[in-house]
Length: 573
Ligand code: FAD
Image 1 (cartoon, protein in one colour):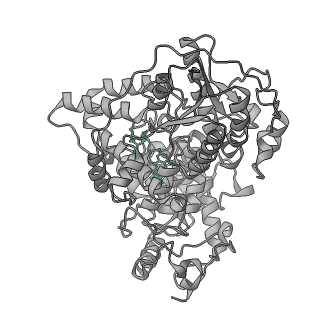
Image 2 (cartoon, rainbow, N blue to C red):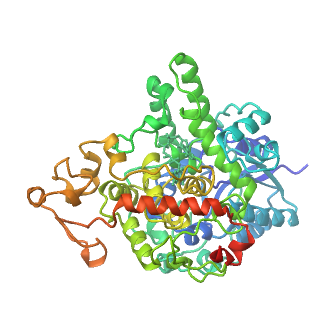
Image 3 (cartoon, rainbow, N blue to C red):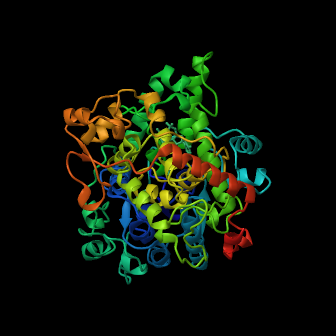
């Protein structure tokens, strides 16, 4: 019988430890195994990702670290990065490399599922067996959905009940000790420039097109790509990725037994920096450099050893991972409408301000005016100021600036800015905010991002819309002196603590002492050194307007899949 010739397709599982799919590939006892990563134009050109996220994944970080680890196990092997879309590449590789098996970790993301189905069909046509395993979550999300009656998990209790029916969370599998040699890698077939397979206007695209030097990269050695090759400018985040770092970070956290065993999320400060108050393991898990099951079992061991006084889900560390699984299983059940309102039966329809991007779309939903809303250009401006960190509310601005520079902010900081943009201030559509997070977060995870935005905007998962975060009192609760603001909003560095959350209340003498002027809207030419923008609205007033608008929307009770939403007749209600 012919020995197995296996392609192991790495995607968001950039690790060797606890990889059920990699184990399945090795169980085939392959004659040759090619560890490959394909340069998927969907991610390179389509998804708006910041250079920070690419640095995390690409050279020196997740991919390079994995490649080095593979080489340590077998000097003839490494992570071979092929610069072409998987949909066009695989059918050619199957024939050219005489492949018998394609193995990969399953994904619940909609794009990934469509892509994987396409590649699986092509494999079957080529007589190549496809082997997949789950490994991105604690439980297999599809099994959780099945045990939840085929429905999405919309609460942590539903997730826990369905998960316990699936069974005990599997214990992590050790990393392999050896990897087979890769086979020959002829690429004398017609190659397709990755960027040419999609018609998109990503700003870095033409640079990347020019940099494209063929499927094997500039040196012809299938090396991990550089930011330059991708057409990106340098990254600004101090956070770095890769399995080696992720495992070290996990062990450091678990070594502090008191911290790990008594972790209570609501007690961690969003204003803490260097070090932050939570684990910052999310980007490692997004790229699969850290297995969630290893994290879970290490946390459970520490809790069991600690005994009395240890925290429990949902506030504990293991509880945090359950939230992650809840969103993945919700995404797996809902499919493509999960990330949006339209056609989503589980998301409440709220007639938000719909700034320009959403006007006159094919859905028929357009910008609104009327009783509960001021005009759309105003909301558009609020949105622009929010994303630039120029709202005039220093705590919101500090968080948004940290997000832009570092690509990560604390969970409660995300609560603050998401509530402020949507139901607790600007009344702007949550999808608009989710788009900004998608671009800037280094841990951007489609399931977690959309789900948490729905939670914070009270469109799904959570409904207590009368509970709003104050951009003044919430920050003060954690950081009276405003050190976090001083770090991220240097214009206000020397302002008295009394005014640091509310510079609009500062006396002229206090502003002069601090060397700051408060004027303008902070956009365009107005961005000047030593000038901080004027506050963009009266928060208490906006809070009241938003709450009554939410109350009315809840009483009408439309969801994204209702006909009235799709055909626009909701406007008459
Ligand atoms: P810890 O507090 O140390 O938690 C440990 C792990 O549990 C995290 O690494 C993460 O994987 C998981 N986790 C914790 N809380 C959540 C949660 N609410 N939802 C899902 N997983 C959770 N998380 C992402 O991983 N990607 C996203 O794109 C994302 N977008 C978000 C958008 C908004 C508006 C909000 C409010 C939250 C979002 N989160 C997202 C969830 C959460 O904020 C981050 O997972 C967390 O802040 C990451 O920091 P950490 O690793 O220090 O978390």
